[in-house]
Image 1 (cartoon, helix red, strand yellow):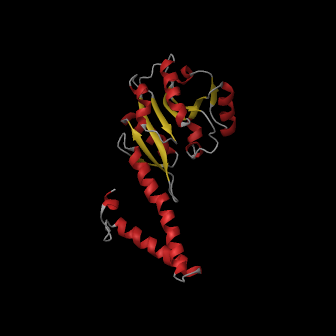
Image 2 (tube, one colour; image 1 turned 30 degrees about the horizontal axis):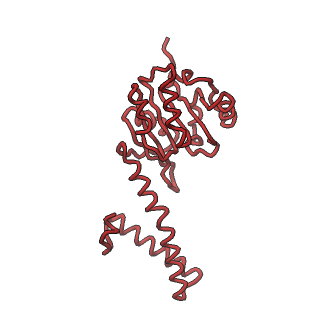
Image 3 (tube, one colour; image 1 turned 180 degrees about the vertical axis):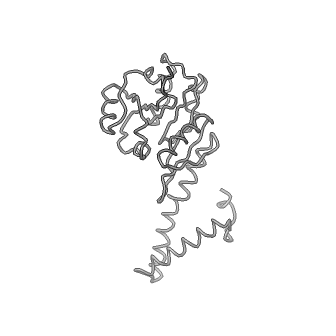
Length: 226
């Protein structure tokens, strides 16, 4: 009889605010849940009303895809525990999500025949967007799951996740300080109230359109090159 393959979950820490685990329909795909203890696994299962808690890593052997939500400082230890378990990893895809780490942290699993990848959320207002990087098989299985959950995925080159985080910081974090300074400068020039916010928004839209068209806007030098 053919064994039905499942999606497993390895979890540590507080997962209640996980964006991935709240995707529509994703929890319907979850089978075994491995926590730090069986009690933690049951707590996660009860909270999300999904899956079933298991005692050991070996209980995930029938999973072709295993999602991992772990604190960054716990990943290396959990990877080693999986490697030490009585678990034939060939054919299993491991996907670490909501982590700063890239798929190289999962290399010991890859060396034992598994496929590995990582996923991180892309800040977006209109859609559930995620960046994914890693080995082909793991990326393919994760993308298939996320497609079912009405989420979009953008594939990155393996080992380039730090470029994504740099882009995210430059585009969504750094400009806040600059726009705050622009607001202050406009107020100093006598512009206040509704006009101030309209002008700043117009400036921002113009800048964004120039960048989208590939225009350098007359700005060059070391800062642009960086």
